[in-house]
Length: 482
Image 1 (tube, rainbow, N blue to C red):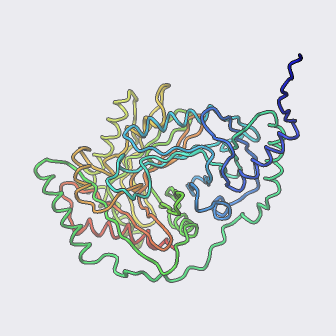
Image 2: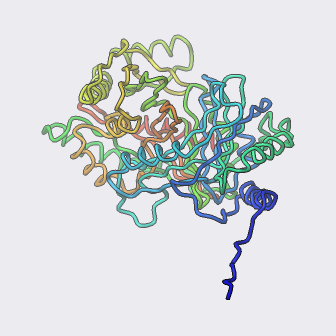
Image 3: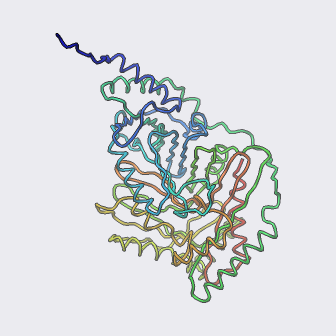
């Protein structure tokens, strides 16, 4: 009696390519993959140079509101990045969030097969990160987790005159890599990029606020009483500095336009980092931050001590007068010194040999700050997130000493900081990175917005003057919202 053989179905290369094309279609239209993507899945990162575009215009056109989104621009450096969709992602709710983030990032980059126009500066695939100010929130319904990390499906990168479109596609199999690359190239070439050379903004309308008086007597009195309480704690050496934040909630008759608001921010603040982080619930955290937490390029680290501020003058002579007052102001210089000392000590604790440039002014459109750039060479064995974990939060956004300050901030502030004053940025596979501090910012959801601003309180601070500084920062942000 002969034993019958059970034959396995044979999948031809043509059928495999049909499967790949179905996955490609799902990929382009933000549908879920038909297979799980984990640390064992190979990911094709395909880069193609494209004509000149405005990444913000591309983001506006292609990024859905129900997925992760990230926008980053430094107008003065001619750099911009727009990213959307999820190829791999991770959210973390623990005190070990920075170490877990670094581990996840290393895992992702080991999976990536880079193809296309990869030999041009600025064409690297990046992984995007945002962290909340506190590692754990006391609120159940918070806007963002302790850490959000994602490798996007799509990324537009602008570096000087070069522009790139990058796709990160998980591979079911690698037999048809050549055909998949051809499909990507054809798809990218079929897009009429000339439509996205410039952002088309709508004509700005006068916004009608539910609460016209943003700085009510009640808000003013509470903030000033908080400052006085903090000064009492400073007087008895319980702490030496604390940053007290203030949040204002506004409601518009129409939905806020995040893209147009970002466009306004980059026009008003060309020397700042313009950013936006969108979650899958239609909430966008946007802002224009002057504060770089850490930048690493080819193992060269740069960070900023940025604290102490004064307004800009309405004329050149008045501007110079304000600058001179700031440079000679003992209270402002003491506040600044606390930040620079903290950064130097933290870097030295890691075995680095930081050096700082002389104290100078960082003059922005509506405010000027005392500024000390700090540099260091980064040896092997220290990861970018090690630096972020060591520096967050600096006294510029928290105070000294940290443990006491954290408790005081939770006591004084009647809102969740969420991403306010926290690190956000990107890392590439060569461990170049850039992280800023999410200040001068707002959380937007449909027709509601929460605006954040903070003031550093040290011995000699004046409650009335600190509230004026808060108003100045909030008004600048409010003027940009559309």
